Amino acid sequence: MGLLLALILGGVLVLVVANLTSSEKKIAHEIEHLYAIGDPQFERSMGMLLGPGILPGNRVTPLCNGDEIFPAMLAAIGEARRTITFETFIYWSGSIGKALSEAMAERARAGVKVHVLLDWVGSGKMDDAMLEDMERAGVEVVKYHPLHWYNLGRLNNRTHRKLLVVDGAIGFTGGVGIADTWLGNAQDPDHWRDTHFRVEGPVVAQMQAAFMDNWIEERSEVLHGASYFPPLAPAGPHAAQLFKSSASEASESVRLMYLLSISSAVKSVRIASAYFVPDSLSVATMAAAQRRGVQVEIIVPGRHTDAHVVRRASWSRWGDLLEAGVAIHEYQPTMYHTKVMVVDDLWTSVGSTNFDNRSFRLNDEANLNILDAEFAAGQARLFEADKARSKQMTLEWWRGRPWHQKATEWLAGLVRSQL
Image 1 (spheres, rainbow, N blue to C red):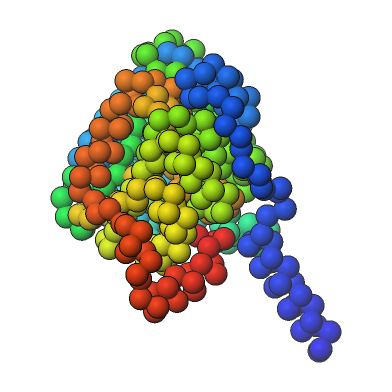
Image 2: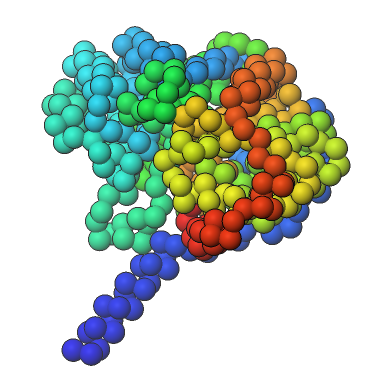
């Protein structure tokens, strides 16, 4: 009996360790500032180090908040003629969840091949009836890393990617989840602030490939051919790249993208992050950029947050940043779920990634990078508009925090690797 108990406890320990740790080597040394964002070497480095190349000829259209995001997604779904592929973390029951599921079901009944990949944890608040209605219509619905014995070592690895591709030609990505909290126009604490992006052009094939990455993992099935990967003509002026990261493969690529982008900055870095818990190297990289004359600004959620533990863990990391002169702002009106970085008003990264260890090491993520001054200027204007509705947090405030607040931050910091 004692031996059996020891074996059970040993097995549980092995599973816990497997879920909470990663065997992949982590970037440990600060990346040297060798060139600027506008230097052709930066573009070459990003294309080679992150995987897919930066492709010209794309059009990326920003969509602000649910009032712009969901009508655009529904319109694209409604116009699908051959295929729809959709991957997301949050998908909950509610009016927008119902509208999207009904739209995809209608297209499936019309003969469109519809493939939906939902994270098992993130879709936990989705009614079974909604899934059954889609499946009856012919939608192929798959859960990512569901609770099975063969997935026990991967339960902490979730897909956080947010990808919708229609007919292999129109893509959507950004920060939005499928839940009614994203409806509206961020007009009150019940309606969140977020940004999503509609994409046309050659980079959509990279978005489709990112979806296929996890579809193959779950289904052992390759979806290919012109219905999924059609020839894509130039559609606009934006050079863009969609890269992916996962806990099992290239988990450091998204962290490398942030570190290399910040290290290459010469003028400004603007970071909008829903969950901002930087590791020590990230803090050092941002502080070093600020000290060499780069204006580093960050917007994070304020008191309207869905993750108070993350907010406290974030506070515990601010000391070196504030002392270096980095400006940190807390958004006041509602939950701030935007995930955008703009560097030197030229390089913009958008997508599913948060600035924390969970996105950098544990989740499957996908980010769209755009190398274009006009696009970056537009995102910088949105950042400034959000900053105007935010409160700047000062070094004096940080140093004067009461002891009990510092204690809660310390406790939150103990689980920083899982946030």
